[in-house]
Image 1 (cartoon, rainbow, N blue to C red):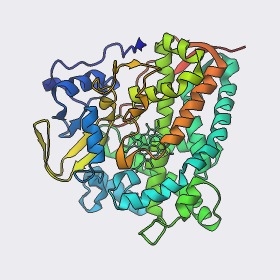
Image 2: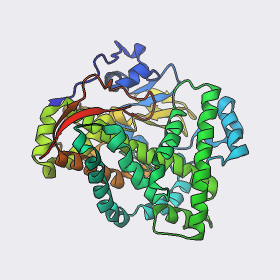
Image 3: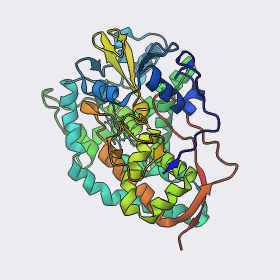
Image 4: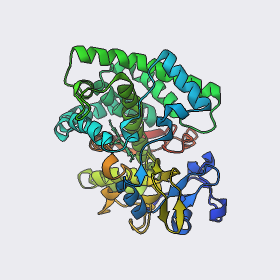
Length: 429
Ligand code: HEM
């Protein structure tokens, strides 16, 4: 078991008084801040955002299960109350596209449960198993496309296309359009970043509207001619209790937020994080490749635990909530910081290390817990498995390409995304 090297100089607040999470430099390596908060202020109100941040594993698990007090509804669901840039974006959607409805992840039961049932059916285990050969073949094909070069940009050549092509095929999009779709999802992702100007917000909205017009044609085709894809099921299945299928606004929200960004970007980031961790921990790499059948599944879980592509998401307090002597007032925004819980020493021994034999590795919160548990986790696990397996089977040894990597992450409060990852390698004979 090898300690993970962190960024060269992570920000380590001297005390809780100095802590903040609303700072791109802190988010570059948030782990020392998480550790301080877990120990000294497990429920902490960030003075810069007013958000209450929960960081201990057990508290997070309880919060995710307690939907009576912790709601997934977002203030932005209420269009009448939108102001500033959010209102301008809303008006642009009204004028040129479709105002996205609350996504599955932004609803509470019973509506959430009713909607989730059609997703559960579309993503049923048998369907995901049937995709397995396709995921495997694509992973080996992508590796074969760069293996003779002796170097690659892992993000661009494997981590992005693997999950994106799989989801494109299942969402009725053409494989040759993946870079256009990636530009749209990047814009969406950028729209959730820090300190955006009005111009930025409107540009991101315009990009999302372009994507909507592309997807709208697919919805219309699948309504006329259903096929065997996941999207065909989502478009054509009546939501129990609603007496209708999903409308265009609901489908558009799912395409962007829950499927292409929530499903593809996250898996991309886990794949890149995994290779970065292996590059920095050569002993783990040696051990992993010595017996992938034994270690690879645990490695996939450890990557999601340690580098949590979804660092945290929000809940809204439905009542005043007392926790560790802090009163979270009704209506407050709460950040369930999965990534902090994933390194909680009360739950995981030597939490900052990759342990290829960790018994409770899959018990992490990287896919959340409870009613909103990640719908795509079974698919993501297969994509991680085959992405890493194809790499291990083809590469003898590798290292970070000197002078080409800054190993920085895109500044974002909720998602953790490595910008690029250039590696050099020796192929297996
Ligand atoms: C490593 C990859 C992934 C990670 C780390 C991840 C993480 C998460 C997390 C943390 C949530 C919980 C939301 C909450 O508690 O509010 C979630 C929900 C969700 N994920 Fe994933 N996800 C991944 C891959 C995928 C994939 C491949 C798909 C689909 C193609 C997907 C679709 C969804 C959907 C639809 C939800 C909403 C579920 C609900 O609210 O009922 N995810 N994901």
